Length: 178
Image (cartoon, rainbow, N blue to C red; front, side, top):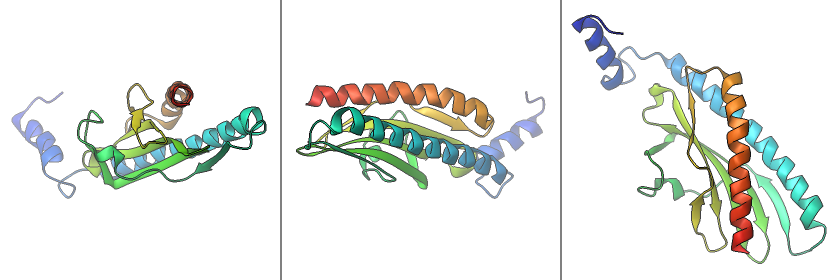
């Protein structure tokens, strides 16, 4: 809580004054480290999903193949109104995708990006389903938020549950598109 006008002004200065006026760069680094680690966990989970889909479905039909890649489709997240905030992909943008090749190409993409100024220490992660016809649909009910104040073990615990729910929804969207 702020008790004096001086404290209130100092607090405002951190928000509007820009990165050189008192904001701690460790805020960004702490949140970025958590986001990086969550994206590594994402890549591992997508690879596990790739192996399971290959074993359960891909071996039965030659028309299907699955591949995990460290990339996404550029430009989708900048569509106005698609996300409840403006993603800052200039300062941070990571994506991991599961490519599903059948007659066409479908993707389940997990993308992480900064939210607002880099020095705020906020990141958003979303899961999207991109169909063969290039329709983009959010598979996560809401963006997952990573912030500098939460320690990684708590973020990871929340993230694993969130990611599973989003992957289930993405797989349902794929089934419905067939």
